[in-house]
Length: 189
Image 1 (tube, rainbow, N blue to C red):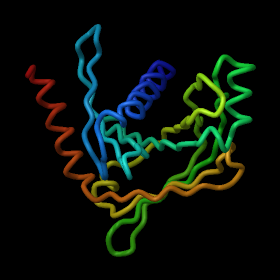
Image 2: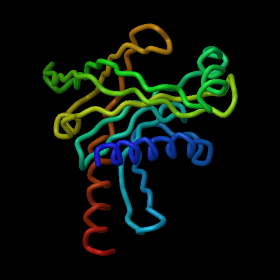
Image 3: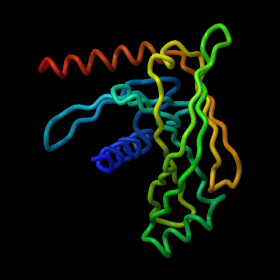
Image 4: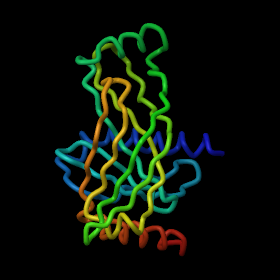
């Protein structure tokens, strides 16, 4: 079941990534809804865009927060070439340690850390842009009150520590909209 949920989340993140070309220039937090073609069940989650690039997603009901990291396949040609030639386009997953820090009002902070799996999208040809994603626990209440969230991890593709800082401006409004959509679906609308 955990594997199924993880694969579902990874699929949603991939769909978010691929939908960027359709939705134009995005900035900040937005609500995203998907519908299962077989069951008709709708799922709602929030995603964060910066300069039309999806950088994060929040699965508010599960208290999960995901980071999307984009890689220029031309800069990491060897990674994409090996994936295409040796593994049918699959880039192997990596275990990473992360630190999450939510900056709250009055100089308070909420911190968490752990080890998660960094998974990569498949590539079809060498030199192609690809992404990696990892999902961690995050306290939704802290994020609603927070000003920014920062995530730090060691990036095995780049070979260095990476920090992603994301504004939480608009997070609460987006959260409320997502929650209302979820409640409407539960009531049968």
